[in-house]
Length: 493
Image (cartoon, rainbow, N blue to C red; front, side, top):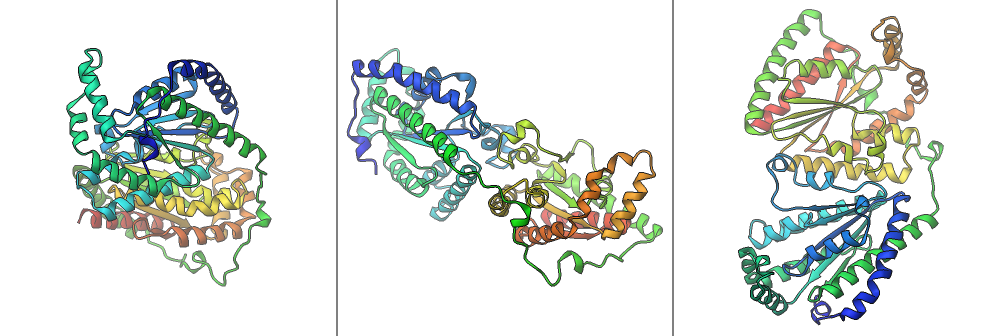
């Protein structure tokens, strides 16, 4: 795979100087076009030590407008990053629509280094590479252009370059103990790198292997490749026919019985029973949450349900049992302009809890398969693929040790209407009822179908759904508390 990149391509100074002005002009022009386009660009620069990755990135920043580029170098995770899932730091650094992000080191760095140091075996490596492919597919499906460049040198070329640096007083500082150690591991590194590139060079995000023995050649090659890929992507997206799937075109599978209609909504607690159970489970939750904080176990609680289903009341019964420094409640509304400029999961990655913390979502990423599906805000292709994207997201949180508990609070259509009318009579609750709430009632059946599909496709062993019978608020609040306590107790062992 690396044979062509080891031939020692060179470029004369004269040729380099001749080609640079035109390349810089074209890069600035395409960058200007990109600023008005509806997609971001992510450039991953990886390769062997001494290949000139840093020099290439410095040149790219010099040739283009730095206001439209953000460069991120990923090394050993910071203390803050260690407290979150490993991919959190990459999601936080993803470029917005119209922008370019450059990653030095990326989600490829850990699998390679862990395999070389024998911290993972071949099966674990394959699992991580599968996750990488899924992530890149997810970003590409959302419109992102991913450009991956591997800067390569042969073992002899690398050895000679390090020697030349050592002899030059002005460049001696470039050679570190780490470089010498990596040179000894070159054969193993090259072998695993070839495997990684082979497994992750896909049609939607292929690798470009570049000879790094001459910085003039490699920088021009990378620059021209970036230029051509962005131009081609702009052209393909402008000619691609936009197809929006209207709600009436979405096939709804007829069901004889739904999950929600099978729930017994008559369950209830007397005021006395409720107060006794409330005190019991809030006390239990307080002790469990303290232990989880000490052990660094975080929780993500997801609350979905009908309008007026009692999500807010259930959330408050949980937070009343917790230390205010340990939790955050994230109310989810329509995305902001900043959020719209990123993948729809980006805004939820922002709030992933640190180790020992609790994040509570009042509505969540499931809006993609509920309101966006029913109202036609997402195309059928978009919401259908989001089931897999959501499962991958939650699996990654779970693999990082996060406890995930998801609730759907279900009430009858009649109970919802009663609560609407009741709210209209209470001065401090009037604002909760709008014409939109009544309009949504007309699509009750469509939402119920969407909920059935959501639960069926995304209730997993690592992130199960709990359907809560919520016609009686007391019963619902106790079930929510008990379920969380049981899940947390199991997690703590």
